[in-house]
Amino acid sequence: MPKQIFSWQGYQKLVEPFNYYWVQKQQHSADVANPTER
Image: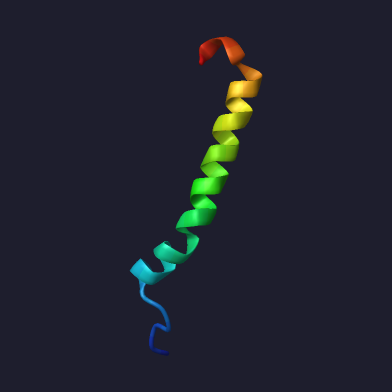
């Protein structure tokens, strides 16, 4: 079994900005679709 190259915390730190951007994009799409539910 090969040793894990990266720790889970390190991986999460790496993808956190991408996840944040994706969530913001989804939220923006929802706002555009339902402008009255702001």
